[in-house]
Image (cartoon, rainbow, N blue to C red; front, side, top):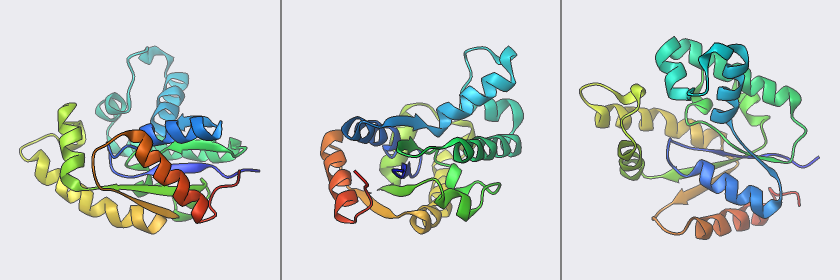
Length: 188
């Protein structure tokens, strides 16, 4: 059974873009944990309608509910998983206190996309400040969040990719593919 390739990193580091490109290259299924979360939420709460997002779930139910629900979605993925997928994890999954380190390692080959803090913040702010950064000092909150999450991403990662500059996504994807092969992390 082929292992999953799982992308992790801070919000807007490029996980979904890179996971989609790699899935196309490897002819594997692409999944996004945020989309899995929304699908599970719609099944459990059909009255929620079509305008559901992780942001709205967090706003409606609060952080603890969100993290517990997210953890259950990840556990369901692990239970049903047949391998060979490419998965983009939500930025908070690796620091979800309802998931163990061992559960996260079971997901597959973990690829950390390490983007610098200012680039990530600029990308996030361009789409509107999310609820978890709302308040008087969103930049300061993001600095704290970035500092808290980065060590966890590094500890979990089987492969660490420094995203050093803006450029064509395909160029970075070539690097990721080459590094996965070079480190014998790709079973193709």
